[in-house]
Image 1 (cartoon, rainbow, N blue to C red):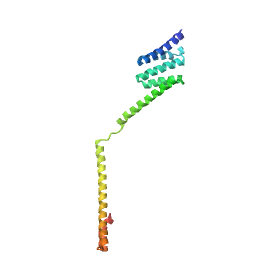
Image 2: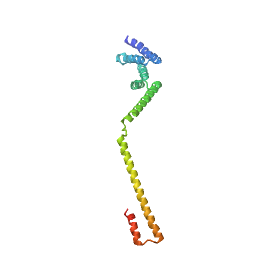
Image 3: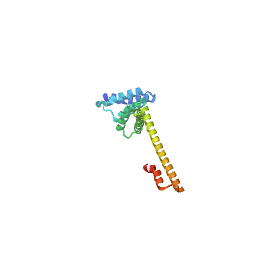
Image 4: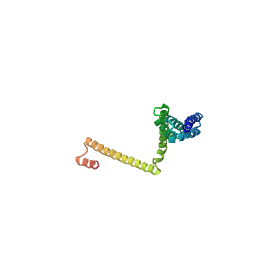
Length: 179
């Protein structure tokens, strides 16, 4: 008697869940598929794995439609274990897995900006000071090199004119050598 009742109720519940899915009523479809699975979970009822997989698949679709992606993935993965060759179940598992990955990526992006340290006003001021110091140092180096060049050009100009004695030339070149 129990077996006859279950043999009638299981297809009835799974087909009713499909009707709700076609009507875009995911919440009642999830509830009805859940009732079918409650019957299937009782060991005495000895429900066939094909009917159990169908109930899991329909509940997974209903949960997916409601945005309960983790629960949908669990149901669909369980249905795939019961019916490994089913293309529909495989396709839906892949679809939910893709949506879960997209959700995780969006969450990382949203939290990434929150967790990364923002540059503060003090950090910007310090950075600006460092840049100014670097520019000032480079400017001083350029001035020193220009002064050395000028001294050397003056010394070589006097040498080429022959008006410079050895001792006076040494005195003029002394600042250049010290640097």
